Image (cartoon, rainbow over all chains, first blue to last red; front, side):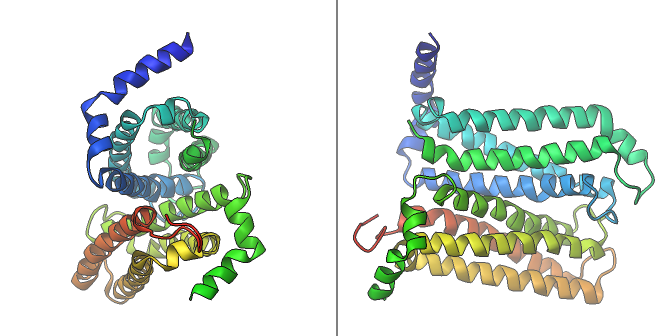
Length: 165
Length: 165
């Protein structure tokens, strides 16, 4: 039942225009991979450093100022969603029947839920706190979960090749 | 050089890295190299963007904190990079792109140090104009490093002494 569903998803993805494009375009795959690594760096260089600040490092940098770099991280995430969907569409069997892929999706989901809780509960109070003050436990937790989740995403991504069906 | 490749590939560390089925061998070193890359290049890019005039609320003096993230990333990658080189010395050393990648990294590090010196000497809220120009060059350099690194996998001619790529 589940296998049948996965197979129909596989057939569907394989025939999408982005899937056919990436499978056939000369140098398409390496260029998209490079973009995927670039997006990853944009994300970790901004969100990852923001997480470190939430954990209490570099307290002299105002949180609000560091937060202004976050759009760069979001653009990195968007680059990686687009290139990532293209990879999955090009060779869906390599992902849908690969446990590392599901670890990766799980870690991305954890990071997503974590960031929603952070903006809903912690962020505004953090901006109102006096500068240089030690970050509250909620902020530290959000920073730690985010950092570990993104390291998990990168690790699972790297392991994809080693768990190919 | 051929005898050097033969000798390196026969060492027990090289053989273990290349042939061990353990995820703690080659896959773990690759993960280290990827996470290190994200922080090293990511912090560099975020800093370049700040020097170019975005998010001016981040004090330029806090550059030192960014440098700490960069250097940790740099050394993680120097270490994991040497291990990757040891695992497949023929693959890397027979590929001209590998030397281009190393040269680009050296250029990027020199640029980062030069930008830091400019900012230290003349820094106010705005980075001096020379630092801005160098930051733009630095951004292009790190994009080139990522492309060069990723394309290594597609441009090699020899995997080991005995096997073609």
